[in-house]
Length: 161
Image 1 (cartoon, rainbow, N blue to C red):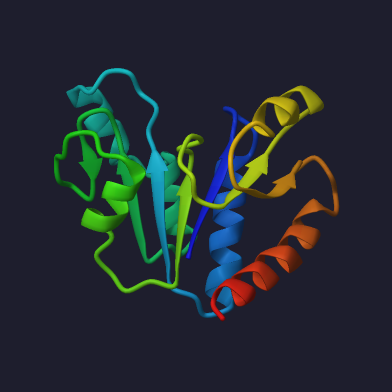
Image 2: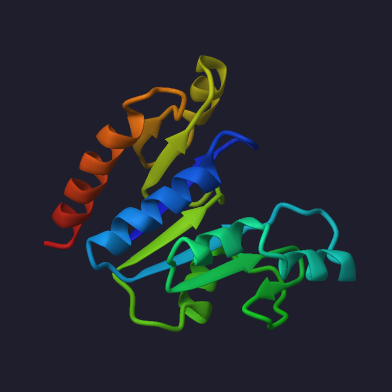
């Protein structure tokens, strides 16, 4: 099962990814994450930055992901270089473990089921134009995560039937 978490910069995508990973691991799912690195230029500085524990895909790994992949312009981290690939190519060529769930941060234009993270109604209006939206969440809402957790587990259980 593949679920994308999409939204604009600083909307809470990485926070929701980490939360989702933790919830899935508590329920004994195997989780792989894929992160789109939006940098325009591929250079040595970005390669060094990717190894830092402060970057999003390392946060996914630290949250418990069984495998975490990041794709840049001309690199892909699992410490191997790869020309830019589509999300489907990354899944087919790079996911190396048997997994229940692949969580994707970003890749708004891909067609997989999406969770939209938004900060305000303007963002939501723009994001609602994306395809295959299954859930919308504003992390400023105090009860949003509890409601999301219930939806997530029900959605996954239904999809695994």
